[in-house]
Image (cartoon, rainbow, N blue to C red; front, side):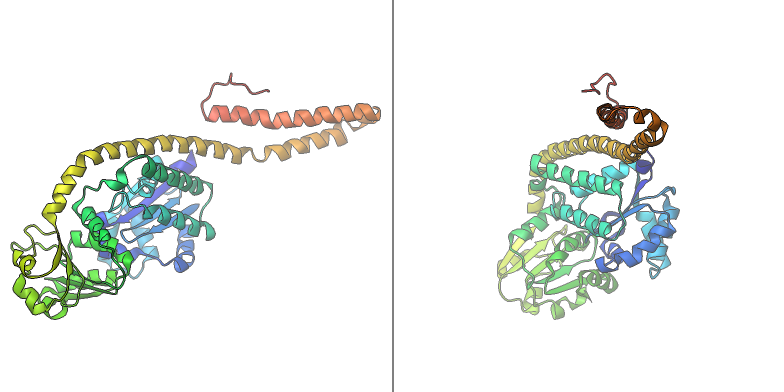
Amino acid sequence: MLALKHFKVIALTHRNLGLDLVGKFHIEPEHQKLRLEPAMEAFGMKELMFLSTCNRVEFFFRCPSELDQVLVRKLIDFLYPTLTDEQAEKAAEGARTYNGLEAVRHLFHVASSLDSLVIGEREIITQVRQSYERAHKNGFTGDFIRLAVQKAIETAKQVYTETEIATKPVSVVNLAYRHLLDRELHASMRVIYVGAGQTIEAIAGNLKKHDFESVKVFNRTREKAERLAEVLGGKGYSLNDLVKEGGTFDVLITCTGADRSIIDAETFKQMKVAGKKIIVDLAIPNDIDASVLTHFDIDYIAIDDLKEIAKRNLKEREKEIFRCESLVETRLEEFEEAFKTRKLELAMQEVPSLMKEIKQRALDKTFSKDLEKLDDESRETVQRIVDYLEKKYISIPMKMAKQVMLEQDLKDPIIE
C-alpha cells in the first residue's frame, strides 16, 4: 500500500530540542497556507498536516521521497530561512522521524497524549483536530490523513474513557504542573522562573497557555534567560538581578543546579515580598532555604513531596500505559482495515458508470435491432433483467474485492 508506505512524520519536540528552539518552528495559522503550500510542491507532498503546540512542532505528510536527515534539513532550510546554520543543524539532528505504520502509530500516541510532556493532557486532542481542520481548509489533506486523524481521535477518546492514564502522573514536572492547576491560576498572575534548564523549560511550556500578565526568567547566564523569556513572552534577567527585579510576583518556580540554597529569608526580605506566595521548588538540593518558610507566608510545593506522590502513582501508571498501548495497537489494526476498504472504494468508484455505459451501448447499438422485433411487454422484461444484472455486476465484484482486501473467506455469502 503505497499511501501507507509514503506516510511520514517529522517531529521537533521539547525532548530533543528544548523549548526555545521548538518555538522558532511555530507558524501562525493565518500564515500556514502561504508558507506550507510551496513546500508541498517543492517536496512532492501529496498531503500535509502541520501541528504546533507549546512543546512540539510536527509535520505529517505523504511523499515518495526517502525520509532521512538530509530531507529534514532541506525542509527546515526551505521553510525557515532565517534560522542560523547552527539552529537548523541542531533541529535536523534532533528531529524524530517515522515512516509508514510507525508514523500512524506516532500520530495515535500524540493524539492520546502518550507522547506529551504531561501525559494525560486532554488538550492535545483538540489541537490535533484543529490542525487537521486547518490543513483540510487549506486544501492540504486527502483521504489518508483524514482517515488517520479520525482514527487517532477515536483512539484518544477511548484511552481517556477506558484507562486511568489521565489521573496518574508520575513525572515530578507533571505533578508540579497539576499542583499549580489546583491553585486556580489566572492570567493576572505574575510568574518568576529561576533557572533556564530543561525542567524549567518543560513546566514553563505548559504554563505558557495561561497567558500570565507578567513573566520573568532569572538565570546565571543572562543570555539563556532571555532566550527562554522570548519564547514565553516575558523578560530575561541575570540571577544577580533577582532582588532588584523579582519582588512583585505571585508564583515563583525554581530549579537550578546550585549545590546549596540560593534564596533565603534575607533575600526575600530584600525583595520586599508581601502577601502569600506560591513557590515550586524542583531543585536538588532545594533552591529555597528553610528560613523562607519560617518567616514568610508561603504555599510551598517541594520536590521531595512530589517524588513521594510519583512513587505511589508509578505502579498504577505502569498498568495503564500497557492498556493504552494495547488500545493503540487494536485501533491500528482497525485503521489498516478501514484504509484498505477506502482504497478499494476509490479504485472501484468508476465501476457503476462503466457498467451503465456498457448496458446502454448494448441496448442502443449491439442488440437494438433484436429489441425492435419484441413487443412492448417483452422489451420491458428485458429492460428489467438488464437493470438487475447491472446492479449485480456492480455490487458482486466490489463485495468480492472487499473480502480479498480484508482477507476474508471467499465462501462468505455474496449473492443474497
